[in-house]
Length: 387
Image (tube, rainbow, N blue to C red; front, side, top):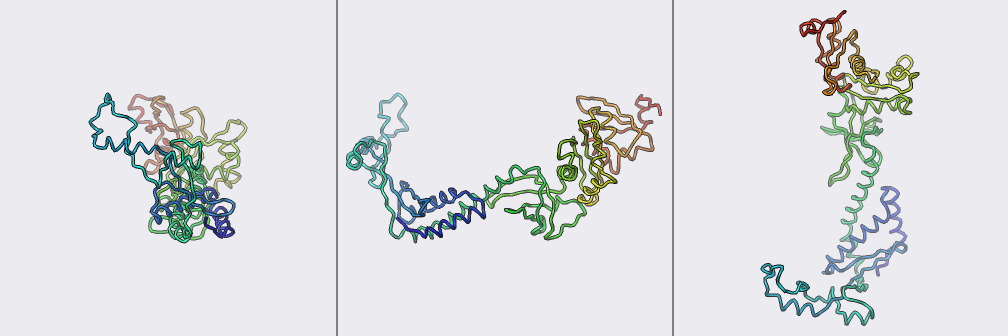
């Protein structure tokens, strides 16, 4: 048995638990696995050993176990050792119990010898004995260190992944810690998240050491550890900002139906309330725009259209095409989610938007394919609109 400095050992385990959040039993099991590997490597041992660390005292013991076997099987196997078993069919009478077997006193014990130790022991049972070498502590400590560190890293990685797994799709606050050519690295407490520079809002400046709101898009891991991918460009980031700034959304009084976003340019968000007395759009804007202004500021000046959602698809599409007005909306195919919108010349450019952005966002927001036509184009198609 190896005597360890119990106080220091337990203190180290407690420190890992407190600082890394790693379960103490995980640490002990990692140590036992490492010490078992060290014993096998340094003492030319077979696989029939196990190392046990006393959880109360910190003492280490190495145990070897032997299996009780029938020595006669060895002679029986030798008898058939020249047979090519691959040529034997299922109908042959060759003894199925004959397996490659050579008695090894390091791992085997005859039934006769075993019963001298345990009178009622049976074939197949095992007997353990302590085989802890006197110098095992020195050898094991040097050999086990690398393995223990690896096991602890694995456990730490699992703790971090477990903590962040249910935060995928959520917004968190971190500190900008580092950057390289492609990414910013955000300190999230126990780990760092990766904010690709392609996922920041176009035109915004990220300052080192500053606090920053980020949206978790993916939680994964590789050989180096946990990977937490972040974004400020994702449409979900806007949704979480609204939940943060608008108490009625967080409380479920106002509901978000959908969000469509072209980061750095424009976002459309559709909101509604099942309480008819609640003005969903007005509540999101706030008195003198106080609420929406906070959101726009966080989005680096990105324009935000708050749209009222309604189950009337035509009316919803009309709302989504804001700031255009005086629209005529026709649902041409409900199953295929297709609609035609007819506008006058004055509102055509507003409905379509610069480079088609407004109609594109409206289409994403409503989940309808929207075909915008002028009144003249509609008449040519046989549709007459009374202005």
